[in-house]
Length: 225
Image 1 (tube, helix red, strand yellow):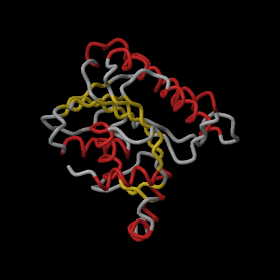
Image 2 (cartoon, one colour; image 1 turned 90 degrees about the vertical axis):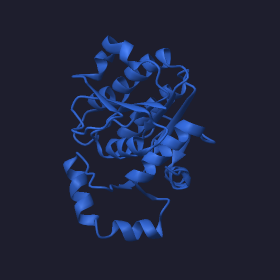
Image 3 (cartoon, one colour; image 1 turned 135 degrees about the vertical axis):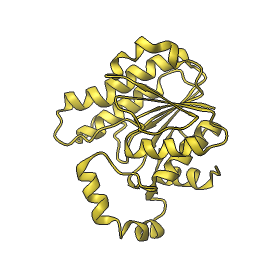
């Protein structure tokens, strides 16, 4: 399996990259982003792009992939709706439209979030924009589109969030998260579980396109690397 990975330097993306590199059936990972992952591995190749809006310039490099894991995202804190829409909707759909044309056999997995508003009409700005993005992705002619909606995520294997406020949260809750995860395993996911679930969905699909935390937990826990 050949995998495209967007957002490989973020918390979820790093977890997905780790699982891809360890998976026996993944022969190549192309990580596309604005900065390097700073990792070296025989399976890993990187493409540094100043902006995702210009990926059309390198279409030849984006052909013949079996799966795309789109883990790129930002916090909506401090952003206007226009700016958050640009980063969340415009960037994602620019990439997805190109990939759907080049790789119609591809499975596209998008990291959304718990509480996403599929109606696009609720009060929460970030949830509306995420819902708009999900709905647009579902209309593209991929082999399959799966929308991951995790809630609380525990980073493992030395992985950290790039967002300062999230790092503080994980630092403060580090002693509690393992306990809470033991009590509520389907509500508090790990970066490992999410990565394994993405690979499982790329291999076998899933029963529904929108996968909430409990669905991700069930798929990721059952997956064997």
